[in-house]
Length: 260
Image (cartoon, rainbow, N blue to C red; front, side, top):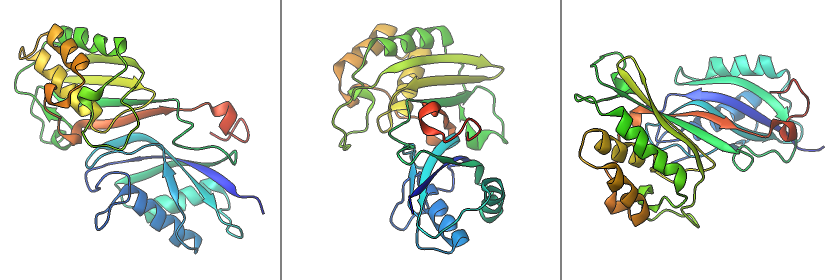
């Protein structure tokens, strides 16, 4: 029997987890899903491959993963199984959809771009506090946007990468990087073909230095070109970071037009 591959569209609150990837002796989103999927299907552990890693405490409002069903295991109706899976999972994870895809479709390698949001609030809010970074001073958004525009002019982001990571290079193609004001909130949106570990939080921390007058726009450029993590600003806390979107060439992935 030919392997049957499925994509899973989901979201999760990262606060209770030590990131997406399985960690020894610590709860992760991947382990939680693999455990639940295997229990519900009454089979050995089914491996789930995610569209990327998120660090401890980082959230995802849009995440994709794929898994293969072993021979003899039947998912049944996808919508019914999705509801069953959601009832099994805690409130920290929601499955939006499960759908069949081409056998070669890959949640990580087929992803063309990923978009992250980082949220800063300038007004204390006890209800949003677990999901926002509070800045008691309002930064200069125009200056931060001027500096953010420089990201689109560069490709090497060594200065914003966590050191000692297992990557072949620090090249990323950023297609969007901008701040928007939404009431008392500042939302940073960044889109790229790939991201390095800790990259978004390091960029936000350095841009915030620009907005608070601690760093000039030209200084931000020099940090990028220095290719040295010690030159950049502080990495921001994880609770305000969300993986917000992942784009795919769906015409090559789906089995039918109504699969997504």
